[in-house]
Length: 226
Image (tube, rainbow, N blue to C red; front, side):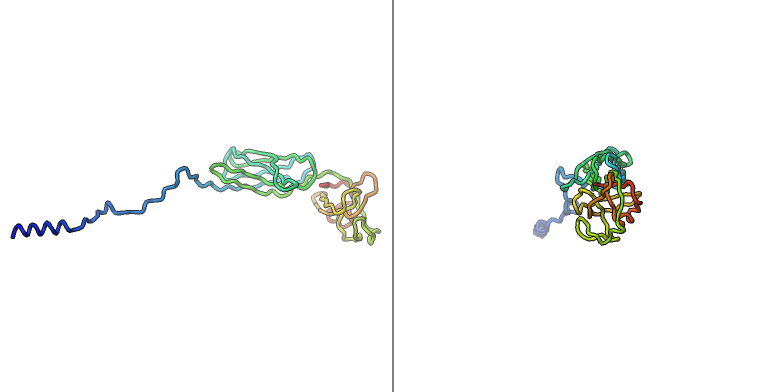
């Protein structure tokens, strides 16, 4: 009996399956980033504090602002819209420790220019752009005005002159050419609608409505983009 009982006990123990200990329980391993993967870039923003956008030809358009997050030595560019589309870089500056920049451009030719500021980014920072509006580059021109006594007459470029007609007369600019005029803080953009003035030294004749919009007197100097 003793021998058979020992054999039975041995057989039962051998048939019992092994139970895994808590030290060997399986868990899902954490994903491993691919070797050489770039870290995500921090987002950046450009702010514009001030823009000197009304200048005479030969003067400087000035844009001041700040790049965030702040840091010294980051390259910021001033860009001007090209006539056929796209942008032309006209100045660079590097930010100071507070992220501030000053960009300058001496505009040689008259006209209305689209202006923006750009930051190309770095390995740690994303790129950023910010529109700075339109800058207007003017020259001086002597002007007069006309209207009363001529209402109802035909204009050289078509149509009839009335007290509400907006536009200017010019000797040679093509009919329909848009001219931006600036006078003592006021600005209008009107088309060439007539020929004149026919007085030596005067470049533009303003209609009565254009004169009123500008707050212009009888004769004097205006600023023009043409």
